[in-house]
Length: 252
Image 1 (cartoon, rainbow, N blue to C red):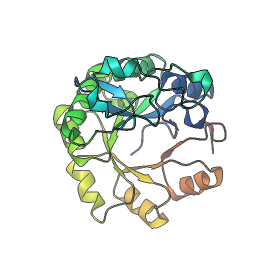
Image 2: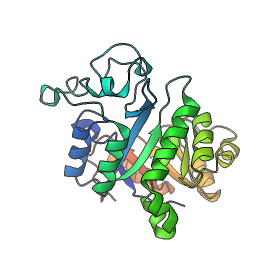
Image 3: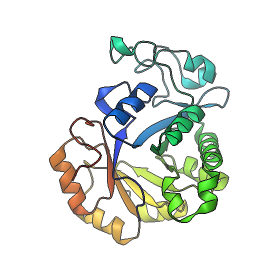
């Protein structure tokens, strides 16, 4: 049910570097992580970029919306200065190059499709198509190689539907802050292999139900070691963390 790494660095570097940047990815790798979660949106020209917020200003030194700019314009903006002076000038990564870097360095990816409002289907289709092309060899080989293929997750059902239509062999996961009453129907409608849930609202009974239904179970964002052990004891397969200084890849 879960063929992927157990512990992921949230947005690349957790609390140690500016999120969704190469600096974050490198910091996570320095901490021993070879599995990360990151977010993907579409720029105005349809080119995907690694970014969490649809509105600029929190992590990117700009104003307006992501879809107000072409990808090259976003890549020229500062995505690191907000975190610390030493990261000033860190660019917004282009998704294709970022994913290629991860693959080349053996870093497994949970790609969260994070569409700006109104771009759900386009974002899901684009990310899935690119992921399928980057991992065409692994998808063709099948078997254990599928464990190296990224997992596409999203809160957007429309994005997951579009991803399934564009690249049905790239695995998908349903993100839910709280498990919906009909969570299993929702997950099966997009042939999801896993449920990704906020650990704060997950109960032991829900964890058992997800596992008994045959899904992998992933939690976000777990920063307390005691809570992490509790969740693993419930049967949670994996989680991401911001505290990559406290919770290492070999955490038990």
